[in-house]
Structures are given as structure tokens and as C-alpha cells.
Length: 382
Ligand SMILES: Nc1nc2c(ncn2[C@@H]2O[C@H](COP(=O)(O)OP(=O)(O)OP(=O)(O)O)[C@@H](O)[C@H]2O)c(=O)[nH]1
Picture: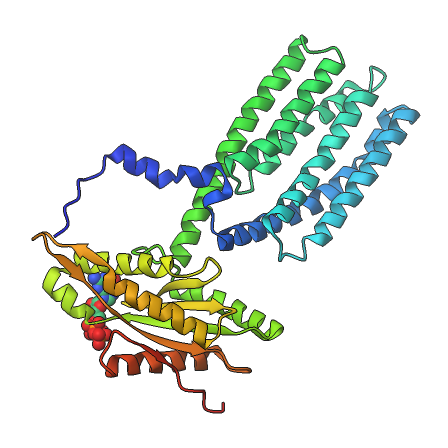
């Protein structure tokens, strides 16, 4: 039996918030960062199109209310901003991108209205209709509000919003309006909207993280589930074929696991699965893919590894499992072993065939007496 003190509700709530994950990307898995980058990109695209159309659409209104000199500057900037946003819109169609590329695109999206705002504040003076100046003064708030549709960490949100607030404040100081009531009110509003925006983007990130983890992880071990793992292996298969590099899979099955459950209870069985998962992880490379294939079966895919190398890894895991033990309530320790099938992807082989072969190898490992590593037979012609 396992004795665990119940956790305080506040600690559970804090844990549920996954604070480190909300602060920055260090704890995010590369696959989540890739998915988030794609998600950010799909949201930049419609915003870029809307702004690319609306920003130049105001040029005729400026023409009516602005003196010629100011109009030329502002119209020119509107055309430049509109063109940049249109380029951004078409660029977003290519959406296999890294997080840094997504951040760069977001920065371009935000820079366009800010550029117009800064120019308007510096160029426009008392000759211009007050309504027009007021319209431009909404741009910083608009830019920050735009951010609320993106899932961002605190660090990212701060690095996007802080320059907006600083730009606003710097322009007010430069124009000698820092003690003006309207200017201070504008700053207050901007800071308020910024705080709400930061709260909103972190809330979106938390929701995305939770949904992503639910969809891709096995809740018991925290490993990838079968669907996520299969997607990763499909990508690895494509890479292996393109670069002519080997790819080997290992299929693990805990030995006589039913007996562990029946003798010591399901909870301890779960602990064995968790311990096994950590033991295997400790023996794999960071570039390997590992997940729960179902029940007490686990699968690892080892890119750039041939049969010989994979057998060494499998044998290392097998021995590490023999060494690992869990404490029992009666003071004794419980050990466990695993059987392992090994199969290397052959040229032109399908994933189904690879999975069937590794399954057969595992079956043979069980049949030969368990706690052993067995290499798969070569594939029959498909
Ligand atoms: N505790 C726990 N048990 C699980 C879980 N998933 C599957 N199992 C159990 O795993 C056991 C698998 O039993 P079998 O398929 O008979 O295999 P085995 O006892 O390991 O025997 P061999 O594979 O032939 O060595 C079943 O009792 C399942 O209930 C889980 O998430 N937690």
C-alpha cells in the first residue's frame, strides 16, 4: 500500500496553474512550442489582412482633414504599413515555422499601427481636426488589445507590451506633455489594458497547454500517448527516408504485470508503470521518442540508430529494470522485468509493417522466457 498525505487545496490550485510554464518556455516540450508557433501564425494571418485593408482605407479621410504636408507623410506611412502587413499575410500561408519566427511575425503585426501612431504624434499639430488626432491616439491601446488573441508566456507578453507603454510615455515626454491630465489618463488606460491583456494571453496559454497535454500525454506516466508518438514516428520515418539514416523502434512489455496488480493492487501496479517509464527515459537520448503504446506496453523510436546500437540500448534498459525496485508497505522491495522487441525500418517499409515486426519480436521475447531482447525478422515483401 502507498501512504500519501492529502495535498492542501491551495497547493493543488497552484499546481494546476503550472506557473513555470506560464512564465517562460523553458518547460515547454519542442512539440508543444511547434504547435503553439503554428497556432500563433494562424491568428496573425487574419489580423494582418484586416489591418492591411483598413490602414490604407483611411487615407481618403486624412486627405479631407489634413494639410498637404502632413497628409503626404501619413499617407506614405499607411501605404508602407499596409504593404508590410499584406506581405505578412501571404507569408503566414507557409505555416511550418519555429517559435522565434512566429514571434517575429507578431512583432511585425504590432509594429505597423505603432509606427503610424508615433508618426502621427510627431507630425500632426493643432491645424488638424481634433477628432483625427484622437483617432490616432487609440493605436497603442488597439495594439495591446490585438495581443489578447494569442497564447503567450508572461515573458513574451511583457516583451511585446512594454515597448508600447514605453513608446507612449517617451512621446508624451518628448512633446512636453508628461504632466498633461489627458496624457496621464491615456497612460493609465494603456497600463490597465496591458495588465488585462497579459492576464488574457496567459489564460489562453494555460488553456492551450492543458488541452495539448490532454490530447498528447498519458496521464499516468506523463509520456506521449500512442497517437502523439505515432505522429512523431511518421515524421522520423520521412526524415530517415530523405536522409538515408536508420530508424529503429523498441517495443517494451512488462513481464507478468497482471501478477503484480493481482498481488499488490492496482495502485502499486501504476507506480511500477511510472517507475518503468522513468528508467527507460533515463536510458534514452533527448532526440529519441518514447511513449505509452497502451496498457503495460511502451514504445521508443531511436532516430539515426541501427539495429546494433538499438540492441545495446534495449539491453541497458533491460538491466536497469532488473536493478530498479519499489518499496512495499511490509518493508520489502518489489522488482520487475521487461521483454523487448527491436525492429529497424527497412527501405520502403511502411510503419504498419514495422510495428507488426516489432510486435512479433516482443511476442518471441515472451515466448523464449521473458526478460530478454529479441530482434525482429526481416520483413516479407509487401
Ligand atoms: N495498474 C495498472 N495495470 C494496468 C494498466 N494498464 C493495463 N494494466 C494491466 O496489465 C495487465 C496485463 O496483463 P497481461 O496482458 O496478462 O500480461 P502480463 O501479466 O504482463 O503477462 P506477460 O505480458 O505475458 O508477461 C492486466 O492485468 C491489465 O489490467 C494500468 O494503467 N495500470
